[in-house]
Image 1: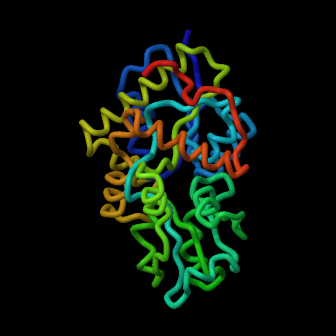
Image 2: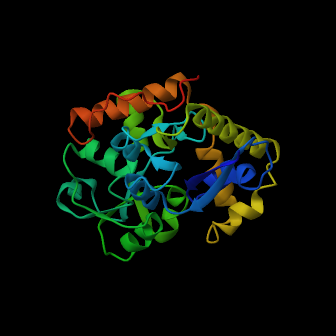
Length: 281
């Protein structure tokens, strides 16, 4: 009997690249099928908070809050080096002012906001907005600082902004670990075999994308209308890597370290649940 699962992921090129084959039936999915929804990652975080989806791309900060109901899958994640959120400002603004100014952020459950709080050692005075609105808002002088994610790292200079702090580099300097940004989480109350099959299907979807790099171009471009082909390629190259195929030992350590630091600061609840939804490797 076919099982239709709700699957949500972002419109960003790394996600549409990863899920193209799954979304277009290019791989064998057995008796599973998916009802797919695309949206901004913070929107996905909040939908998962309400338990509205079976499988979703989520910020790791959100996953840490939802461990009782969702478990992480080993495939489809965004971790890496040199790919973390960045604090940007107009030229002439000094980072020393960060403590005393409002900061535009891409959402209260994003890893970007979590990292900013860990760096500042306090709750930032933050204003959430869609990630793609932050650079224009800072450039227009509505905020002195903005925390940018995704393709923003490739475009902020076009708006006359400077990067004052790379939170990914800061994380790496403190932990020597890759930065965990987002992962695919799945409801724990689904059958274990369905969870493990889904993890395998996502891995196959990534492998298809790697083997057929031009197949997904139209799909990616459809959901990234304002991005140039060059920025799309840079985005995919940076955020789709070996951790996307399998989070692995080092990636697991990075996630557990992020959660431990957040829990020690009281900004993420403790959980006795295992990190992964599927007990396999």
